[in-house]
Length: 347
Image: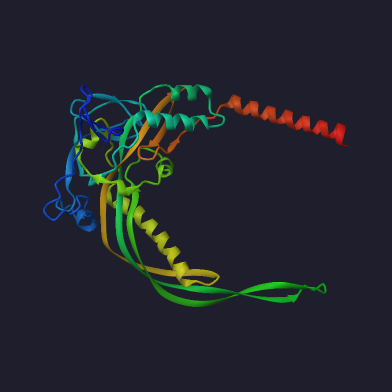
């Protein structure tokens, strides 16, 4: 049986029988099965705080994508760049996912979303559009992410600028407005709570691709169960927990900086120094659904990704030199024609 988005259940490919994926046992107190993990304890490699799982992973020699494979897989085509891959036998231990968003779009729906996106591309070669729009299989990939929660308190020193406008002589017998700014030193503190800062834990796809697939509705997260992966592949994370936290902190710092400016107020703000304390840092390792198509066209790989929850599309696109040249010639002829009409009839 495999997970089928259309049915929202496990479906047998032979008889069509369906089976609902029941949530895991939550215990007598009905505590949610999706639990935040303590970040600092996990860094000390405590398996109690960060349960691990052993998986068989294949690494693509071309794009370095790390994809989980079944024991029966010996060769496959990399879903990220369409490169043939011979599967090794090595096993890897990684932090086990706490949750995932199950695929909501079927492969057919993802294909339709990709075709609609391709039709809107100007100057793309017709050959690629036809090749990519053909009924070729797409790969359903669960892409790894980290989410981080934290509380912060920031003490700052800065300056608040206030504008003063007055009327002055313009030197020509008239008046003009002149604005000056006075600055006053200020200090203060800003407290913030961050929830589910989402950080991509993979380097297989360009970050601009995955960023463009946002937003994700994380309220749809379900406790991780292997049944959801049936019929799909899962990518192993290549950006570890600590590296992901570095990006999360950069986003926190940006939000804190904006909050400080609001706190300073006035017409202008200068932030001279910030001292931030951070605590209660927790994380989750989650998987998000992506439909992926990798096509080789004239010796080059092109990738298209579809958000498996919302249908949002992003991809790489070549440009047709013929179409661009034709558009330039047509534009030149149109400009020449308009110039001729102007010279002949409007002068």
